[in-house]
Amino acid sequence: MNTAHNERNSKMQMKFSRRMGTAVALAFFASAALSACSSSTGETETSPSKEPVVTTPTIISDGKLTVCASFSNPPDNFKNDSNEPDGAEIDIAKAIAGEMGLAVDYKQYSFSGLIPALQASQCDVIMSSLYIKPEREEVVDFVPYLQSGSAVMVSAANAQGVTGYNDTLCGRKVAAANGSTGASNAQTQSGACEAGGKSAIDLTLTENTTDALHQLQAGQVDAVLSTTELVDYYAKKTEGELERAGDSFSPITIGAATQKGSAELHDALSTAFKSIVESGEYGSILDEWGLSETAVHPS
Image (tube, rainbow, N blue to C red):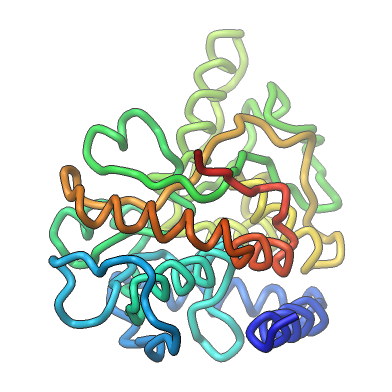
């Protein structure tokens, strides 16, 4: 086991061994929400020590791969206790950049602002739990790198008896991040509720998912719709105060998004991703974050 692997493994153990109490989880939600403004983090990773194995795209001239993210979807991407970018996607981004001999610079935007920021050339790529969906493929190109799905989170008390993504959500107060698949799932289920003669879902759209979870823990909503990874992460972090209702649903793939038609960058990212898969670095990252079942296997 190499030094980098040991360092990441130690880091992961620290993440899951501290701050597991309810009060601290609530504080985490609040701090994450405060950090979710649409601005650059101003943090650049140190340059990789190894020689590049993938030719650096000519559109990158400053030695940095600029990544847009919302930092609101742990364990995929979030800000850690030191207010630094962290998560499986952050580690994957650094590994991919390293294959091209690049450092990583992060810019933070609300989830709904990620694609507009990319289109405005504020970053080179989005790596922020962005699902590959037909409507998004019309405006950006993707390099798949994680499998995901959707899930419903409730409080352990679950006074309204929500059992999952079904008609128990009808008439309930539900929160989801604006522009997210969780929000569109809520709208779809709400339509099904009304079609079946039941009350529509009372949907609150938040700037990010941590805001939605904060509302759930405060008793302001009955459920939150988000990614399976995030729901399971907080079920563990809050020691069961928040929990998943029912099974995960709608399996889907997460991808790194580049500007439409930016073939050189897209192909370089794809080649770099395949390289970290073949070297085992990708698998090690997922293992350390407890996400081995989310692996994508490029052809």
